[in-house]
Length: 308
Length: 230
Image (cartoon, rainbow over all chains, first blue to last red; front, side, top):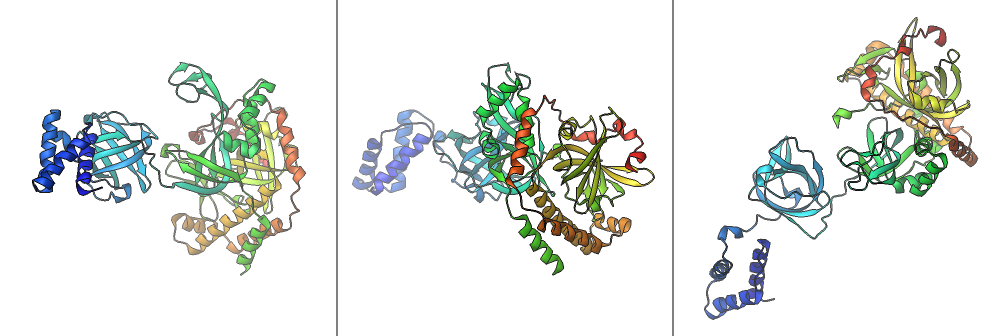
């Protein structure tokens, strides 16, 4: 690609970002004429072509402000900087203030950072799990931590890339000391996937539902605890009881609670090793297995330390 | 998340728990025991042998249990306020290895006694007991280390109140570890047996007892436990 082609490409990109499709060939021809034939300096040529396009499209120049530099989350260290970043929405929190439209966490492969979309910014809402370009956001520090604020001059664009998040997986060992409510064979709302209580969805009321199997529990290592969620696959791996088996059991006993009782008998009080990713409150378990090691060996090791 | 702060389940041998006599109040107004090795304790995780269960009075639905580890015996009570635990208890035929998560209570009568109010009790495999002993030994040793170092407020308080003979504690830890080493090999059938039992499970009203129930005093607390414990 020659120099002029490259400049043409940049101009096309810039207009595209602002939502305008322009003819690359036309841009190239005009640039080539100015730069090669008439020896106009590059920057002047670019400005001239841009001005021409702006007039042609009948838009104002400030629609074309170029974006703040693209950075990674780990680069955000000082407040008050204008930056752009490509990030995935990790988590949305409940906004406690009417001035805030959305608040939560976004992240890329280098880190996770809090973000705030001010209500005044008047931006369309972002969704958890989707990746966006957050252009022209302002870094800020709040309570000793960095965050980015989305204001009126910012731009949020959904992007086609799936931004990877940093490995925030923890690995831990502990005993399952509690299995909480809404575990076992549960029913979820078909519309929103929320767990139904007595057949009622907290949002959609009486609704169509489907079965799911999960365990919400507490794994405790004697120093701290992890609130964990095991999904169907985890449960099947540990107990051999998958969703189908659970439904069979419930049918046989005319009672869904037998599944929960069975899971409690098989899992409570046992030690586990698991890896998981922390959500706001719960660790979403990735892999989990019963803890296995040679207790005698470890006991001997401790004994020799004691006498040593 | 702090709203839901839950107290961790301490790993403590019967020998140590039974020595605890002192109550402390934490910031959250949660009543906790001060262990002789200088940490607060309001909940324990135990794996031991259920030696026996005995209804305190006929049809009272109030059962006294004794659970042993290599260092001593835990005493506890299970009543209708722990429906999950009560249901499981009635299916267990002692002696059997069980895992228990329990709140601890201090009963102050003629002598001060620590008792358990289990949240659940389930039969578990022998492996689990060995893991528990090893883990509890580790935790106890690390608490002993902290006692030796001194300095922390609760550690100092423990010294003042209990003035524990740490070598005695280390001796008990050793005995517990030796029990693991001499324990028989785990047999596979043992595990299988337990799994079959579960088919019989009945309807169970699941009730989540919120943390603040710590503050509730149930009527069972009013019973004079001195005879029973005697």
